[in-house]
Length: 75
Image 1 (cartoon, rainbow, N blue to C red):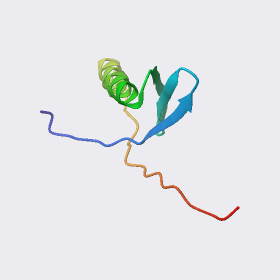
Image 2 (cartoon, rainbow, N blue to C red; image 1 turned 180 degrees about the vertical axis):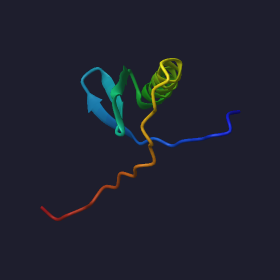
Image 3 (cartoon, rainbow, N blue to C red; image 1 turned 120 degrees about the horizontal axis):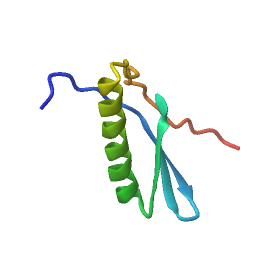
């Protein structure tokens, strides 16, 4: 296990073919899955691959740690 653990915020949107997942702090990390579980796994895989690519290019990864929260209002 690495000595540094970061957290990133995932956003999932229902689409016709299933779900689209995107990392909020890193909009280039995006994927689609047939169901939410598949989408979560594919998004995690895509994020890991993007982190590896950035490290190979000696680029700094986004800091992460954002928090999304739903706000309920009466409409």
